[in-house]
Amino acid sequence: VIYALDLFGTSVFAVSGAMAAGRKRMDLFGLIVVATVTGLGGGTLRDVILGVRPVFWVADYNYIAVTTTTAMLTFVVGRVLQLHPTVLLVADAFGLAVFTAIGAQRAADCGAPAPIVMLMGVTTGVAGGMVRDVLCGEIPLVLRKEIYATASFLGALVFVFLSGLGFGRVPVLSVSIVAVLAVRLAAIRWGLSLPVYSLEGAARARSRPDDAA
Amino acid sequence: VIYALDLFGTSVFAVSGAMAAGRKRMDLFGLIVVATVTGLGGGTLRDVILGVRPVFWVADYNYIAVTTTTAMLTFVVGRVLQLHPTVLLVADAFGLAVFTAIGAQRAADCGAPAPIVMLMGVTTGVAGGMVRDVLCGEIPLVLRKEIYATASFLGALVFVFLSGLGFGRVPVLSVSIVAVLAVRLAAIRWGLSLPVYSLEGAARARSRPDDAA
Amino acid sequence: VIYALDLFGTSVFAVSGAMAAGRKRMDLFGLIVVATVTGLGGGTLRDVILGVRPVFWVADYNYIAVTTTTAMLTFVVGRVLQLHPTVLLVADAFGLAVFTAIGAQRAADCGAPAPIVMLMGVTTGVAGGMVRDVLCGEIPLVLRKEIYATASFLGALVFVFLSGLGFGRVPVLSVSIVAVLAVRLAAIRWGLSLPVYSLEGAARARSRPDDAA
Image (cartoon, rainbow over all chains, first blue to last red; front, side, top):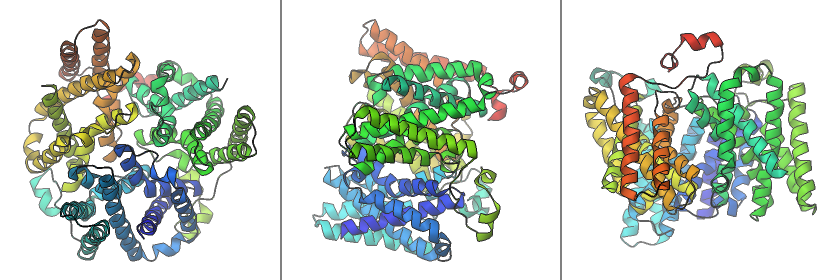
């Protein structure tokens, strides 16, 4: 089940990568590259930092098959997806939740201490989207959108907390996933956001992060 | 011979990095950094992902010597090179071909399965140029220019196919290099390109990727 | 003492990352991410390339604590820091000096040859700032500002030279740190810069790198 969720999360992130690339008028190959980097980037960075050899998608190339196929499908039906932005947002929240929990689990399996487990959960969840935005020539949206990485952070906190209490693998993963999902969906639903750092006092009152985006 | 080709490919890529940096009015050190990253980036990413230790240019620092020297030469004679853009394009096609074949070979030597061998060939060929463009504040050109990464992909396919048939190291490398070169030079000569993903149906008919570049 | 200097350098770089993120109107989490990447990025790249496992901040998570705390403090008192840009510049020069020397030392401890030791010193010193600028959607300033990476390079050269003469760990580190500091502070004080590569002969005479920045 975890494995199926992981592949689903990968394909959701790949769709977001392919659509971002499409918005920049890249060709089919560009879509495949950005989709692959978005889907696998977070986990790759995690494995490289933890020193896991070989990186997960070298050992199991279903992952590459998923991102490539997804990018080609998006190339064909991307316009339909655009008509359902909410479906995409919810699917993306789901991907974030799954990646965060699996990333934390992977770090815990390597015997990493709690702060690293949390950081690796967040890294797995958000790094793919950050590289996607950099490749598309934009400032990573996850750094200034409504509660996004923060949802991932809270989920990682739940993971560490429940693991510390001695709960088993399945309940810890499930509750963490639900926690990320709940926070992220609430943020989407009610437009919640963290305070923005402002250089001028007056500007802070007037503007919203969305303006700058 | 392979080694000489590899160093030549490195220096060609370093020239392209140094010239891109020069266009952004970087100083001499900026040229050296961007040239080095462009020339060594693809192979470094490949070695890190495959878990090869140490990375190739740590083991043999002729590579750094080549990129540094090339950047300094480009600083001096860059204006001459600009007068011969076709020479640069052909040299770059050559670098792409050599890097793709050598990248695939390196992955195969690590015992990687066919899909990973192909991906590592393409990564070695195009990642350096992608990082170059990101450092210069632009959307990577390889993601939307005429057939570029696609040429690399086809060469990697040829590599895997011929290896699978049991051919030896030399013929496999040679034919892959020739395949990438042929596809890439044809794309340059006749301006071939892949279809571009378009968000509006009408726009797809009207515009060309070049317009967006 | 070295360890204390290293943590101080990390926190100085984290401040520069948090302030760059603030200028782009990122939220609190964005500040933490950019501060962490700026503070730890150079050393992480060094460790990954050298094959050191695990990366330094996985083994000792004081580093993450420092960058996170620093980012939160900057979020609160950033406006005060802006009033003292010179303090920040000097502190940053100090961070550059410490990171260069420690990076070179780390490479030397791995038994790397002289050119790699130098490159790892420079990488540790400047890579964090480069990733910071890319995440903030800008061309890395270190590639075109007044003597910055060049100061790091000269310090790394001093390190290799003194090590080669057989001096001990402490004098080599101290003299390298002082060398970087001296060059960098002189460059700040008198606005020194390297020549800029120019595409048109006339433009070279007229313009300054600052214009293009």
